[in-house]
Length: 146
Length: 123
Image 1 (cartoon, each protein chain N blue to C red):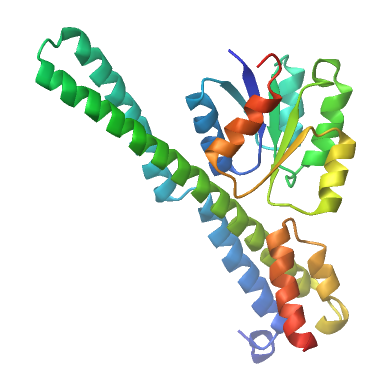
Image 2 (image 1 turned 180 degrees about the vertical axis):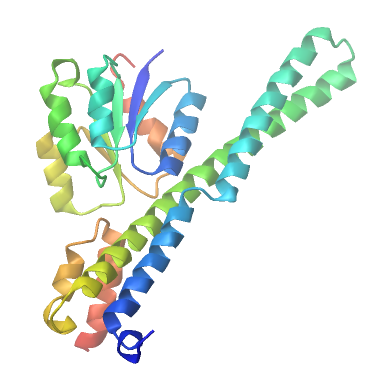
């Protein structure tokens, strides 16, 4: 690689855009989600099996334990569902931030003229899709205003 | 069984929302963007409630709501917007397009089910 290319900001930005893009692709398919999903499905299955057991069970001690186990499984499933939903929303937000970074870096990399004349904080604002992104943006801008 | 159409471009969100809604006894149909959502409606699905994200490729949430409102079968179907946007301008835009409710992420499953139940016809 030539020194000119090595020192070209646009190439650096293009590489960074691809790096963040690669990270974004992995966000929706993490093993954590898969494991949460499988655990919840397994618990649902176990709960069903325990329900079936009650039909053939005449032992009162076992029946008491079965009822407790079903209740516990229900609680864990509820917590898992909440965790899954919360993680999915967090992942969604991270994906949106990654999208913004990828688009911004990609645009900067594609610019022909000097960078500062082609991409402004106003351009960045146009890419936001959530209030949280705007809050982060404003916090940074306010630091420079002080 | 009441059908709910979920439209979101995040596979994880769709999976999670489907899981919660199915767990509450609803049948769930899904679309990965506004266009897919409209196609589902075109296939004859008649959802009791529609849940949609705003920022999606191909056809965004606002466009989806506008198109859904032009389809006679979904002209009055409750449409809930589930999004990370909490800004007033976007909310006004969604309302003007025909959205019935708004839920800002992060939301809890109970909040989601409560809003769905509230807007469900013949609840």
